[in-house]
View 1 (cartoon, helix red, strand yellow):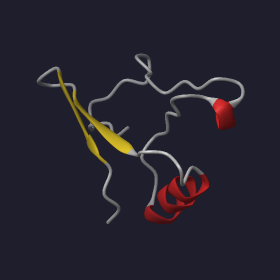
View 2 (cartoon, helix red, strand yellow):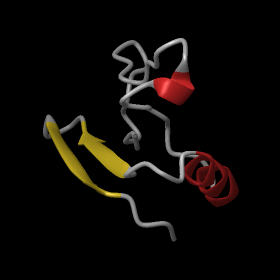
View 3 (cartoon, rainbow, N blue to C red):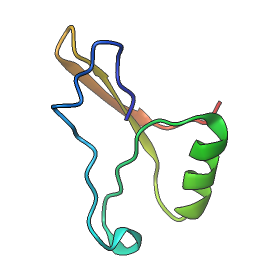
Length: 68
């Protein structure tokens, strides 16, 4: 999940099940390169996607995550 500069954390989207290792979907905020790599490596058998939200235009785009 990548937030824009006007994001209000009152409308949070990132919630996970208590047993995150067996959850069908795992949500995470976009972090720095090293932390993103660590998370993707931990869940290496999963597909990784990036949800980009533009709060100004009320648009959301879901696309495959490509590490930089």
